[in-house]
Image (cartoon, rainbow, N blue to C red; front, side, top):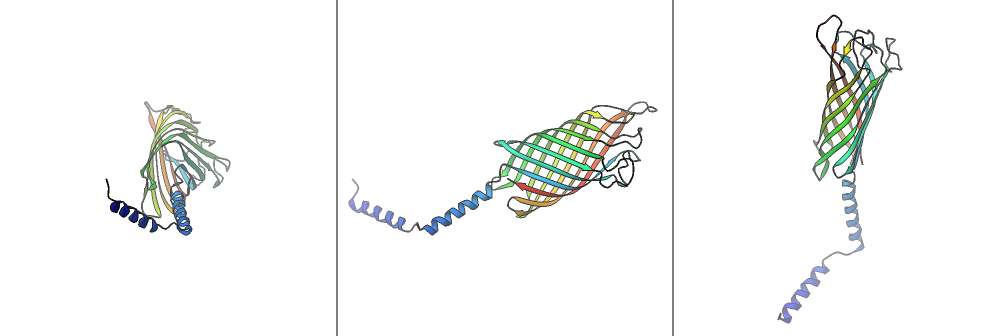
Length: 264
């Protein structure tokens, strides 16, 4: 049996410890503020919305321009991209880009000429550091389609009027400092449908590569601005009337833009 002295000692020190705990209303309020700050720091884990505005330059491996959009074949564009989590690390992502020939200088294609790119499909995002959701790696499998209403400057030249297929992509985001984040992505595109106004015989299948890198500055915990650079190249084979065998067609897009990112 425990001695009465031991029991009294335990009770005394228990009461003493409880008395040292600040149970005042002010302390409770301060604790609630700390908890709210923690929640604000981590609540935007569901997804993101990114907007880009800038210039995209279109070109091909032919010496002369197949489109003659303007003197530099550059188009102002806007792009909206977003992803949202659905189940655990799995979610869905969407990208839409619209480029308009607003810099027309009276050449083959008027200001009504445009190009649009669509990407849609599932995404898997793994956060590398649970204390910083901007440190992640993601994988995606998406449907890809590009379409435009461009007119060829010469029917013997080549540029895709419409192409579609699917892509496999990876993206990595790294917080460089407390205020600056770096993002980079790489996609492999597999084309299974190709359409052009060219008189050259083109294979429906092709492939492409897409790469982008972003540098972002944190305005707030969930809002960032920065610069983005992207380049893509697509490859197809075609037959020329005076050439035995197949030649290669390459068309590229280079884009430099201002970027805004919102986390939610």
